[in-house]
Amino acid sequence: MKELRPDFLYIEKLISEQDRILDIGCGSGDLMSMLKQKGARVQGIEKVEAFVISCVKKGLLVHHGDIDDGLEHHLDQSFDWVIINQTIQQTLNPGKILRECLRIGKKTIVVFPNFSHWQIRFHILISGKTPVTELMPFHWFDTPNLHFLSAKDFQEFCEKEKIKIFKKAFFHQTKEIKILPHWLSSLALFIIADSN
Amino acid sequence: MVSGFLQTKIQALGSLPLENGEVLENLELAYETYGSLNSTKSNAILVCHALSGDAHAAGYKEGDKRPGWWDFYIGPNKAFDTEKYFVISSNVIGGCKGSSGPLSINPKTGLPYKSSFPFVSIRDMVKAQAKLVEFLGIETLFGVAGGSMGGMQALDWSVLFPSKVKNCIIMASSSEHSAQQIAFNEVGRQAILSDPNWNGGDYQDDSKPSKGLALARMMGHITYLSDSMMREKFGRNPPKGNIQSTDFAVGSYLIYQGESFVDRFDANSYIYVTKALDHYSLGTGRELTRSLASVKARYLVVAYTSDWLYPPYQSEEIVKALEVNAVPVTFVELNNPAGHDSFLLPSPEQESILRDFLETTP
Image (cartoon, rainbow over all chains, first blue to last red; front, side, top):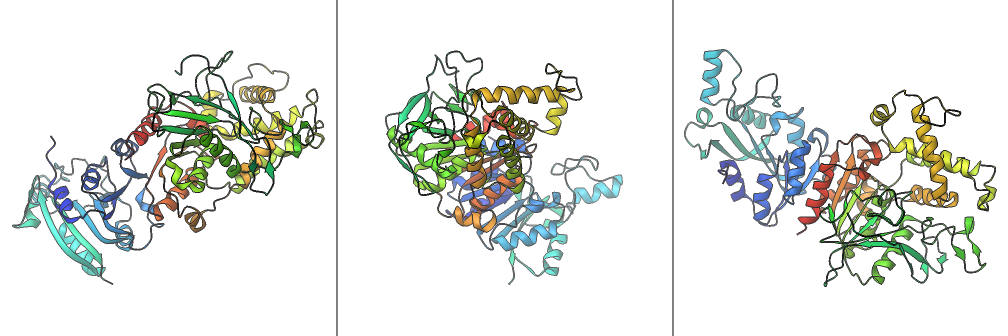
């Protein structure tokens, strides 16, 4: 069996039965399957056709489309949770999308690759080249990632936009990282909501 | 393949009150079934045909060169697996393939209705199908599925009979026609109306408005294909046949489509059915959201990037309205190149989506 991702396990603990959840950029639906099994009402958005077909195979509800213009119709606060897991760095307009997430979700879970992991810092310092890592295994010419951000960048963004941060968590490979997370984690998770 | 030769049955179903207030007496529906109904009567799927389709959706009837219109998807081990499901297909009312329509005998006059047949709506077509489903002893349909006009019927089934539809599959369809869709149908109707043989719809078998109907079909065919498909299939090639009347392959193809259509379709029916399509409206945006407020089915909506007659935005309108109502829905936009006709053509992706959507029914 595939080793479960620590961020998935972390999210699974947060949600309750019957919660209405929107997974933005849901991929082939692994997280959605976990949450559905727990009794949540889950639906996803995904732009890659092959992933959409896998979601249908798993009996998941999925909306094939691009999130850069696909959230407007959802009513304010109509989801208990909006999850945007390793997607935000691939969108054209992350600021606008996060605003939309906060509008339609009571709480939003944002997960992204943390660009301040020590290996990335050293890689740039020593090699002078854009890092290619386990979590971001792409070269500059073939990467779907349009933006690179660190946990600190995200925190700064939330302060500037007056977005409330409920909780953060950091991960590396299969473990949650509690010591020196900005250096040692390759994945950052934030739970946020509109402060109004 | 559905085995053995099939027969289209005709069932008398009493009278049908229509949406416009009239009553259609002596309602008859032509239908076929594939597979067998299980003991709990819980495995029935109704498939609904498009504008020029009929009850013959799968397998071969005696003398058929080609199987039914959705044979790629209906049969043993196909998406609509007839080893598991009992598939029902019926001809719409207003049509000309065995169900009540302009060619039927008006019991009041003893003569064919022709253009005195009452106006029928998509909803009337659905109500007629509901009578057939009831006659077959089926309380709840495991699924209703269709493309184009069939998709409208499937959608309307779920609105009209929320608790009788478990799964609703809507392909290459919309909640109402746009001005562009009405425009194409209008030119088709005007082509028929301007045929010297039209005679207000009161034409005889030996003097049918065939030129007008053929023109309507030719134009329809343009809208069912796509630019890339036409380029690939015809390019700028010279005609194969019809060299007296056209210089191009695409021209001879359309002429052939028009001419063969008049042998199998009635001009009055073309007018009735296209009008039913154009008048159907559940609205868009908030109005559509309200129209779909009390639906209960689980939905699969499929659109095709290359379909410019029923563009994907129309499917997405339906999906968004369902999502706002927190109704379970899956939306897939397939990249098939064949335009509007894509839903009829073989595609492994479509096969897998249809099959998996049905099989994962909770």
